Image 1: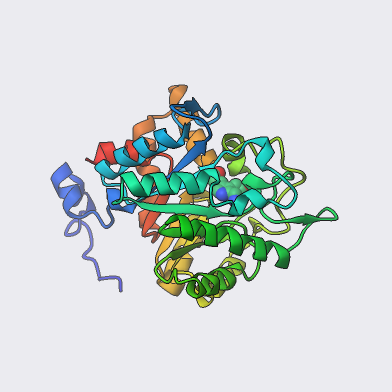
Image 2 (image 1 turned 90 degrees about the vertical axis):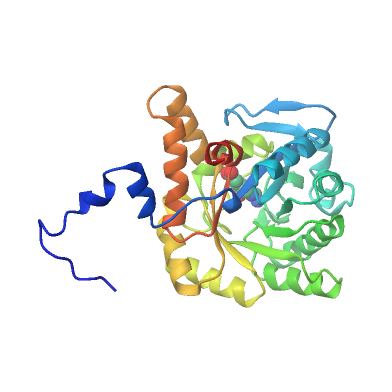
Length: 331
Ligand code: PBG
């Protein structure tokens, strides 16, 4: 693999770094707008854009404003928009039934975007946390997150999203067996073209803090998610999860969070060669923005550097709150 190199001075590796053109010529990876998926937060109401305190520059948008955002993203060439609902407290119950309400926020936003901006792909999240009174991704019985009944609920949620017209379903719940169950339910209901991007290697992470604030789950969460999300110490387990989810019918796999887990991205790509994505999560975004706002780092350069790292690590694409900003700078 490695070519033999002549000794110095025949080889001077600085030669290819001398000018911007030469550096571009030998760049091994590139980032394009087509690699981007933009996560957006949806809330109730009309004509509302409400800032998320812990994520400078990120908004919770009412459905009409999400449609505008989707149009802007499509014009920039961003491949997909990923919807996360901020559900009112009335929609957060023990049975999480709002998750499969055909008229819930996520499904209404999907229909509105599909009608107005048909050329952007829509991704949605399958997990019960926006609809749960405990803030957990599955159903809670006697203080425990139960697996199999949760999978039944997640299947209903996924079907209602497919019915609304989403292109990509992203199960982020980490229950065992959900990819197979959702895949066969989708096939059974005639939704054979709906893609599944499994949050296969999703770690129990402190970097989700600002997201839970954005979707209003931080106050609600009782306990933590360590009985279903992965332990940061593990890498072989991530490969087992990815292998299993691909075998159950996932079209694409995701590693989450991103930057602290680039080794997992590289290993996954090398081992399976499947379409591989990383989620640069809320805490990663918040860290860069906060340091930039303090004048401690150059925010634009840190953003670009953090994103090319995912491509170098083998990812095909990235979910990032920076999507519109980086798309503008690439454009
Ligand atoms: C919940 C979900 C989370 C994120 C995406 N889907 C949070 C969690 O697992 O608690 C995090 C995204 C981010 O931090 O940007 N199913």
